[in-house]
Image (cartoon, rainbow, N blue to C red):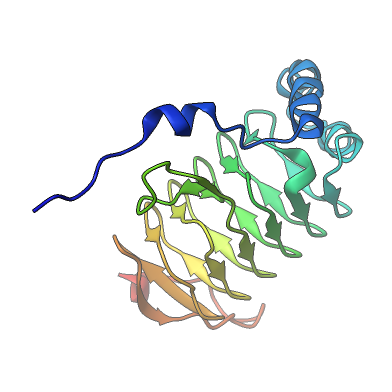
Length: 196
């Protein structure tokens, strides 16, 4: 059975980025040392740099200096949200992170892929949405085109390849619902062994 053949030459000749995007990428790479080597508590400075390059960044958002953001103009970051150390925001497509949402250390949000069915492997820029009050834990992966609902939690090292409903906790590869998230009253004692 003939399964076809990839057309790598055509794939390499295609230019997936417009001239304006190439210019933006050059400007971002020139600005990047000012972002990367800024002291850790200089969140306002990094917010300003991201805004300068077209990101929509809410008030009191915390982006750590080692976070890797590919295209700032494709990033919307809500009020009081955070992007942790070494997080990778591969935002070829738009990435929206809601208010008070947390993207933990080394999490990977991947808003770009290729159409594996097409022999020329064209670039696909599929958006990612992280809802308000959601938490993407350390080392988790959020695939292209996925939505993580409001208040949802994506467990450490989970692989999300489809939408996560609001207020659900998911874990594993592929990520599956393990329970519903319920916020406790500030007067209740902290979580103990019931998590395990």
